[in-house]
Length: 204
Image (cartoon, helix red, strand yellow):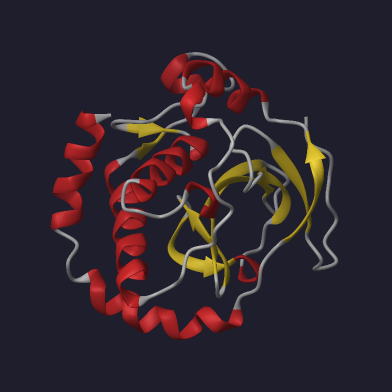
């Protein structure tokens, strides 16, 4: 973990210019809204195995606080998102680990959920509550599964995505939202009622 933090710390230091972008983008935040979640649902097998390796990351959250969105917070979020997207090379789990599904913290390369895990890790250490940083499973327009990080704020839910450098309100993405970590317990998952008249498929 120290190696990861050191590596991305260097990248963050080079991203001071993102402060202007962060402040400008915040003007759009009021247009977002929170996702509507349903009851407890199945945990992705990759996350289940990840929790066995890192049990301290999959426990009850001390609070279910949202992040108060300020220019300073937004600047940190934009910087971490950009640093991870820039420094980690996209590779499938099959290419990296030789198996179809393996969730892990990446150091140089990783799959979509690895990007999300690393952003979650870095942002929590920037002081953002774990309950506001939720790994989320979606379906892309082509039918493929994908994982992103949902940021819960007092101005709505935003998406940090390795396929998109912009941090968008969740409603402005073209994904079908299926399920995400519970804000009350990082080891449990809840369903999502997309509410945008999109067909929600089943997830293994």
